[in-house]
Amino acid sequence: MATLLMRLAGPMQSWGTTSRFDERDTQLEPSKSGVLGLVCAALGRDRAEPVDDLARLRMGVRVDREGVLMRDYQTATGVMVATGKADLGRTVVSPRYYLADAAFLVGLEGDDLHLLDTIQKALKRPVWPLALGRKSFPPGQPVWLAAGLQAVDLETALRNAPSIASSQREHRERPLRLLLEDPSEGAVRLDQPVAPFATRRFGPRFVRSGVVDAPRQAHP
Image (cartoon, rainbow, N blue to C red; front, side, top):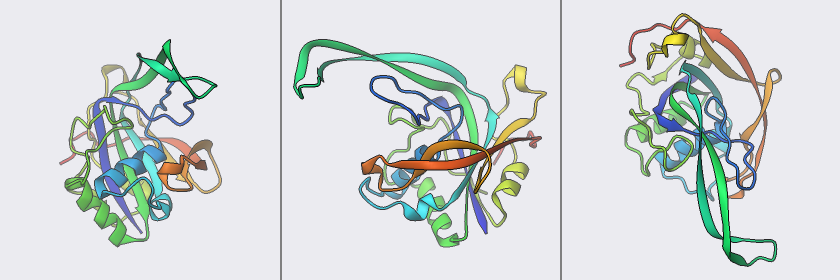
């Protein structure tokens, strides 16, 4: 059993799991589908290729700095209507939610050490640009961590890893939130890839929540 840690920190992030039509949501922490999409970009894996090996990895998140939930919007004209034709006289307003100034330590746990090592190397030299949920949201710091690949289980790795960011002033005396994928207990998240990303098919998974007092020194 081994765990690969990665740093997801930047000015803006968005991890939508329930977006429909014009509105785009975000969770308060990274989704599994979004993290594995980032991994696919690093590996240079096409959206039509299978992701079964990645989907089997167990994911956990430690929230080192809570993001501030923000809303923006975009406009578009010439949008398709029910008839299948573009309405050139119609303008659509699309609300977009995102997290500002968040920092997450994300772990992927699995038995396939070769796969985790391949991902670790790809994060250092990604084939395609990496993004924090949306292509327009690049990481503010490297996702790759020098000590990212560890021969310990997911929870141990996340509990013992040094902090990757300072907390906001109002959160400095509080423990950090910890979310761990669980086989049978916890809140249900509909972000488990069950087919290639091109098909946009996702199933449920359980996520168990807790807290941890993490070391405060900066991660190398």
